[in-house]
Image 1 (cartoon, rainbow, N blue to C red):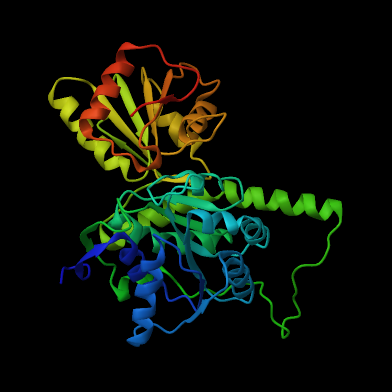
Image 2: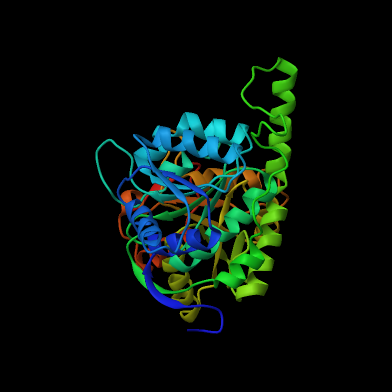
Length: 385
């Protein structure tokens, strides 16, 4: 037992499950899918042991699971669900409905390759393909961050009245064991107040949802949805500061590492960040001025913060464990858009590295960094490895 809470050896999926227990959702509609299923299995263990009080609904599909999650959330209760890969794509229609209904569902998504060809490996394309459905998206580096971010996501989602995804990668995080310091029940209770929405489906207050609207009403609703998303960055920063004050761990919405005097900054997100951090340390010890930018909050994209952190940097190198045919790496494209028109914007190298879960070592990242320092960047993402 530490001063903050229990310290356990957990895989990344179970780290999420322990955070869900602390958040105490009332309804958990799910459908099992590799490599997400251990999240559900651990939650059912908690229920069987009397450590949680929730309605777990095993649905006939992921589409149905999200439909049930929306209904429960609109009825005014805290809701959690989890999925991966093809399951997330089957939810696509309902993801739009959830954000449009302003249902603050929190969902864990375990990044996994999409078919076809068939595979079960780490790849961020599943969640990044849903980047424009109106959900907050957090990308986590390890199990500890996934544990803390699950609570943080409930806090931000319920303040913004928007759904949120907590995302980590298959196997590298989902099934890898590490020491995780749990937030204590007392800390969680003080950090995450009970969910009590002003508007909910309740015959006693005479509210409903789902009626057909006029064109102007639809436009006004989308404008309000956009304004809510624009306010997420400030809410996320405040929630992160409060969590850090409570448990001693903070992540921000972007992280800058050893960027002072850097001739090149490596930008990435997810589990590859830890490997890139090691590469940066090794390059610095060899006299090569390289830094790291980790993007944690991908939606809404923290463009203002990224511009501030990359101002004056001579070059940027982006590592993407994802691929959009026709445009390349998602983060590469987002950074180009964010820096477009900025005075003195750095040239950006985009590398598709780790797609499909292929292993990227510190040595490989060092080689890419040395190449980026010596080469002119391409207009498109370049395959490496």
